[in-house]
Image 1 (tube, rainbow, N blue to C red):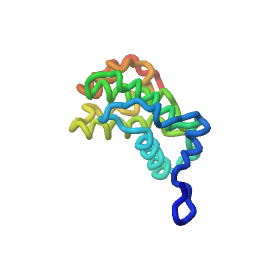
Image 2 (tube, rainbow, N blue to C red):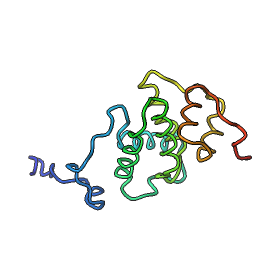
Image 3 (cartoon, rainbow, N blue to C red):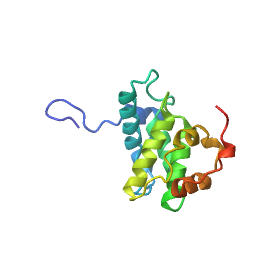
Length: 157
């Protein structure tokens, strides 16, 4: 269908067409989780703020990939555990050329704020994010909740 100005308003997003995405196939993801567009928007703000050298997505159809990632996060129970899964999965999926850790951290902080929570530890954030693969979702959840984490598992710089 075409608007008065000649714009096709029923055309699907080209990214969706290429990836074979059909909105009718979408499963409901928990209302408390960010949607893919929010994560991408957070990343774009980080790109703008930090004037990154390497920008954009490192994968085709990042929105669709985030749908899958969020479905995995939705399997977890509890605010801190879901936040930890969100953080770990955004960072390890590495869907962006740069700033995956910053995007994961900003998205996780926003998620916690939406639940009237805050990370218990802000002093070791950079070290935890750099070593995120060394910890399970449950260990990261405990760190977000209590601030406690096994520092002996941090890799030397």
